[in-house]
Image (spheres, one colour):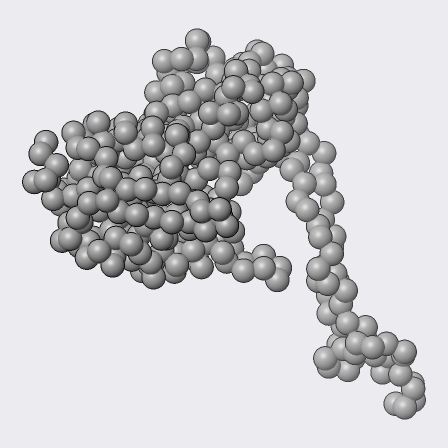
Length: 366
């Protein structure tokens, strides 16, 4: 394809080898050359982006993977988008396979919805469209004021199960918590396999003041005599119901995993302590092989070492997130390439074609 007449450019917003490699795979499938740009960090850690070719009136696709230095990657994307906007690009479309801060998409205690803030920042920087994959919550799409195409990695992971796991017909799909049961059920139904759910995951109970209800004034007696308490009930004589404290239930496995291959499915695998504990429980219940399938392999901190020392036989993730260093530390980590669907999404968006083809037989629960 003639790059000059293609009407669009594909740029890489990250100078890391992993992002460059994914960008090259996508551009090779599209038959175009990677746009010329320079992204680097100055000595004071400021990010500088230089666009080395004209983009006036063209549609630009920015590919950005999210390495461990999440905030630097975000600034690279924002600065490149703004540089393209001020260079009179017609449309700026971000290809962000793993959307950062997606776990902070709900209001918790006295925090904030950081994912909504990031969506506003991207729009302000000049992005007009986003292509991403397996958002942590589908409702995140509502945070944006422009279109978001949320692609799915499940077809690639299902294909891996069918082709790379011997005797997968003897497997059972496992949800490591009840909240992950819908995704696991979707996999189980398409593979015609059974379903098991691990119950008993503890939730952190941080002291945030919610378990300190105001003291209730004793209205029986002389009205001038009050209990020594700094906080009084909002209405005299009315007591608020006391919330029962959560207690960690004993871990149980709902479903028979004895003599089976256990396949745990999830969207993000970051800290692996829960997966290691789940693998031990499944081993105790008789599972003879344990696989973990996830779209985004963040694998932070000591995850490679913990996986290597655990009962987990294999961890399969896609290349939406760079994890080459983790693979060198742990041979159990395998990678599935999803550049094909990203390239097809770019081609269809540029040509104004329907995206429905990419969602064939895909359910909302994937």
